[in-house]
Length: 339
Image (cartoon, one colour):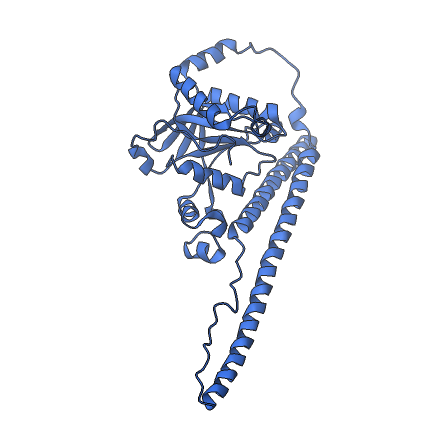
């Protein structure tokens, strides 16, 4: 769960008809992106979280500001109280006329893998007071590839309703199948658009240095993808280990269930034989269903397996992107050599 506890939204007492519309996009202000990047990179490899503030307008969720949550070690040693810290931050933002409506939270991740049970429980906690919220996931490691590794993640409505009704760890395969929920129906990524105010755009234009002749940047033409490939393959091995452990858990449950059903059949056969003898002697037959004889075996939660396979699928997609980029560079180089 996010390290700031339950969200505080001073606008939650007012109705918002726009929340009945589906969320189509998330608009991030430029300074919000810079604050998220700065907080996550300075704390890396420690994973950190923070609060997102903004406005929910129509089909767009506007994130206009954010602030960092205290680190876990600061909360554990009593240096900072998370609840009072959040209340004080909200009060200070309101006094300086900054949007103080909670619209979600942001968190850092490693190697782009964010699909975890913690994110689901945090989202459901936010939804208790905010009908529509978002989680911004940032991967500091992904900046090395030259892209902006930001994702806006939310839970799909069908899964969120099932999780709130049944409980995340109480969702079995049968329950999810009955509701038509598969592993692809848990998370949903919302498109992100960046926005800068006219004053910020004017300042950036004024601060932009003059273009001068420099040496050609050949770093992007490097054919080596070994570092990124090695780290993703290590993550792939870890995901495969998790898949193996999940398969073991399901197999143990299936064996235990089959053994119990066999024991039930044998017990029922003996009881029926016993009742046949009692009827022959004119005695009252015993009940053929004893609720205390066999206790039901708890089925393992389906969410663990779904999340493991989602993580595996995400790592495979990242490997496909890395190898495709490397092959494109090789093909480009071969084309130059033919000239």
